[in-house]
Amino acid sequence: MAPVALGVLVSGRGSNLQSIIDAIESDRLDAHIAVVVSNKRDAFGLDRARSHGIKTVFLDPKSYKEQSNSREAYDRAVLDVLQVHGVELVILAGYMKIVTSVLIDAYEGRTMNIHPSLLPSFPGLAAQRQALDWGAKVSGCTVHFVTEGVDEGPIILQASVPILEDDTVETLSVRILEHEHRIYPEAIQLYAEGRLAIDGRRTRIVESVKREV
Ligand code: GRF
Image 1: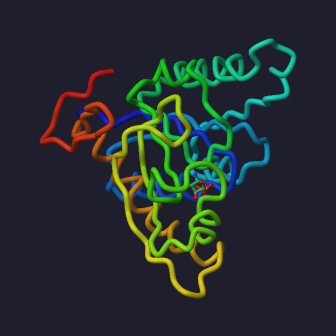
Image 2: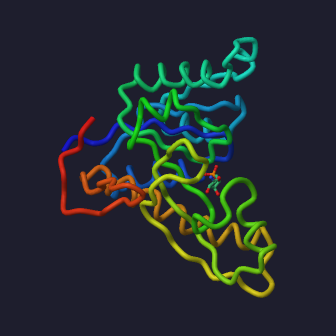
């Protein structure tokens, strides 16, 4: 199968983007990054992409503020960029903007996100803080397909991380992040091999099916 053309959306430091770049460069991931898009001009993820010769696009949400459906208008612009670059699979990697049906419908079953908890526990912001505040003994991270409900789509891969007695948000986040950097490239590779089949709420990991675009 041909390498998957990825479009990666970032808002910040882009360490997950880096893990995907590293996996591609070390032949662990059969993909190429067609474009990295950000809603933040100074996202460090954009610098990381540029330093690997990857095309980047900054789209300023302020330019769409005046329009009546500004979030949808913004996503139409994102969609244009993704389509112009021939993106097959959209990767949300620390993208701090809720995506609308404009993107989700166009890339149904072809948009992934990573979240720093074992979903469905602790969706939304500050997942590590939520886990600590609940006194949970275990947390982790989840790669899932994106649907309209925030952090609700079919789960692809998860990794668990024990919560230690003296953990802070920072120490727990660091340990979770190590697993994020492992399972996100793995999930994308499963997609690349045509091994992900969505079945209702579930993502089944199958022998191999032809990727349908
Ligand atoms: C990660 O913890 C990810 O799970 C969450 O946002 C953070 C992004 O980190 N969605 P980075 O920008 O990839 O370093």
